[in-house]
Image 1 (cartoon, rainbow, N blue to C red):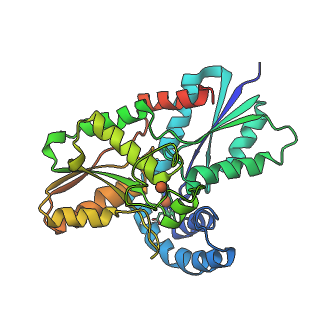
Image 2: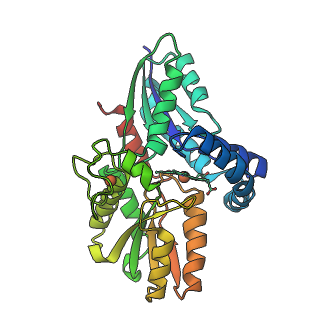
Length: 339
Ligand SMILES: C=CC1=C(C)c2cc3[nH]c(cc4nc(cc5[nH]c(cc1n2)c(C)c5CCC(=O)O)C(CCC(=O)O)=C4C)c(C)c3C=C
Ligand SMILES: [Fe+2]
Ligand SMILES: [Fe+2]
């Protein structure tokens, strides 16, 4: 009997923390028209002329700080997710891992599934909240590759899983490991997105960024809004930990460039909280399923340092889903559920 195929896709990471490999990674990543969604000429000048040459060496230094003897955290956690999911699903399934940028490529993972003769493919982009720049880009790439195959099997895509109750419970459990009541305030810091992309993602053109709270409450009409899905994830984690609404803030980090991104910015909120006398800050980062540069370095090191310089005592990162068995159970559910 032929197997069922599962393709897990994460963002990707450089092959090594060398300047050359980081530049190659940034080039592929930022030349994606869904990530920097401006004209081809504008993107080429910006990415190849400015970001890759200048950001490459700076980024390489931060990658060197988080690199371990097992490699990039994003990669090794993703590999364990693949192996653990394969163990859970057993011989009736073939699970492969692809990265949207760099290695292993989505194409190589899809080819393994083709060689394995799978009868169908379930694509799971490892981003809880939908954004065109992440999940959308993964789905486009898969469709581009598979559209060239002679025999195209049944293919299904998971759009998002921002409110999965088991995923929420893992973030909550990881939060509880930190003596919640010893913190003055809690942040839910999500990866940012240019505001332009939020507006573009609203097909109705009636909701995103049209009023003060339109991107902070998830409804039927803005169900694909990245910001609204992030707010929903944060609300669910906060509710399961009994964190009152005035004790937490939803923020967006990792802004690139000068144009406006989803707000408020994590860096500004961290600064304001420190200046207003907040001493201990617990930070969840539920846009990521695995700890990576953006959590291990940006939150746990950079924000912690800046917070302390302004009078705060501690910015504590809550660990990500990583290899938690309940999270692997979520993947199993996403791989087998009827869509
Ligand atoms: C215009 C630029 C970017 C957009 C839009 C963007 C969206 C986006 N990214 C993630 C997840 C991750 N991003 C990571 C790193 C990273 N992101 C950008 C730029 C944009 N991201 C850059 C330039 C980098 C590289 C690092 C740096 O130089 O700062 C990572 C970490 C990868 C790792 O190897 O650890 C993740 C994960 C999401 C979820 C998202 C939109 C929703
Ligand atoms: Fe990013
Ligand atoms: Fe919105």
